[in-house]
Image (cartoon, rainbow, N blue to C red; front, side, top):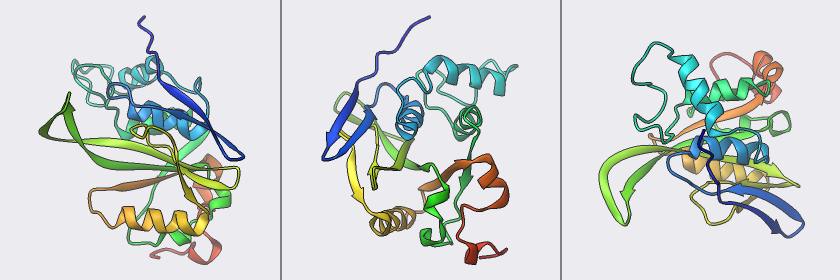
Length: 199
């Protein structure tokens, strides 16, 4: 079994210590999960590959990851991995404003964004997808994108809602709210005034 050596930072940012894995191969989903839970041992590539095989046990070419086995995991893998922590990924309807989210009831956010594919310094005309986690650490929200050299402070809740609002203006970006299963079931990740159908 081959082991991946991740380049990870434990950054001292003012009063905050922030764990941040940097991008290796196509393992952004793995990095997003570990960064979200702030734990380098939360998940590993072997676990995510096992999830892929369990999701499609009879498929020669697994539809949930890269054909080369380098990562590029889809949302089904992330959702299954989150279930291992009794968490759920809730797709956020971009017709809603992020200010309807009760941030006290969630673990954090995972964004799915377009990403250019490069070999060395050459960009190829292939559109890929990239996973980014955002979460609150010691009173401040952080962009924990594994393609960044270090985590970026977003700011307080108001600044974070504005950041998410800006991200969701793009049709090719998706937001998932990570919360515990109970919070998902009763929709308490929404502020009470938004817990009606059709809003």
